[in-house]
Image 1 (tube, rainbow, N blue to C red):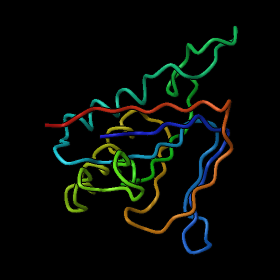
Image 2: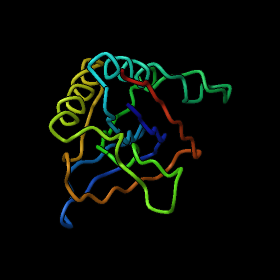
Image 3: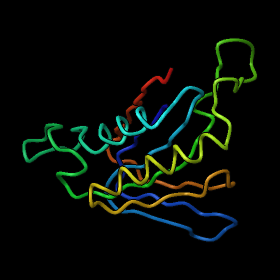
Image 4: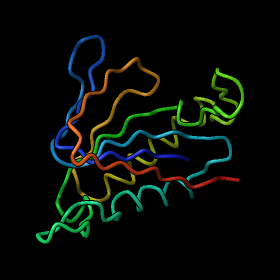
Length: 148
């Protein structure tokens, strides 16, 4: 399972030209589910997202988590994170989990993140979404936890 985290001042999802969801300061999380991923990887990833210290404290050091700053989370499914670009010029998606497996794991991550008490917004699984954001920093991290 892969999650691309972007620290944001704000972010939002539009579908068909209509605003669907938005957040203020916090994290935009692009989430990709791969073959072999389970709830074990999903739970680990959710805890890592909540506790990763990537927000600045009063001294300007990255010592605070999204939970510490009471930030907001926007989780968007992103199967292309599972894309293999090591051969040729067209990405392969053999490692991406099928939608019937990926969607419940995506929803599980969202559920685990909501246990934090923070505001958690989402996109729509498999929808054609337009994602907007104002990067903060920019600060971007890739988290990865391999399934079986």
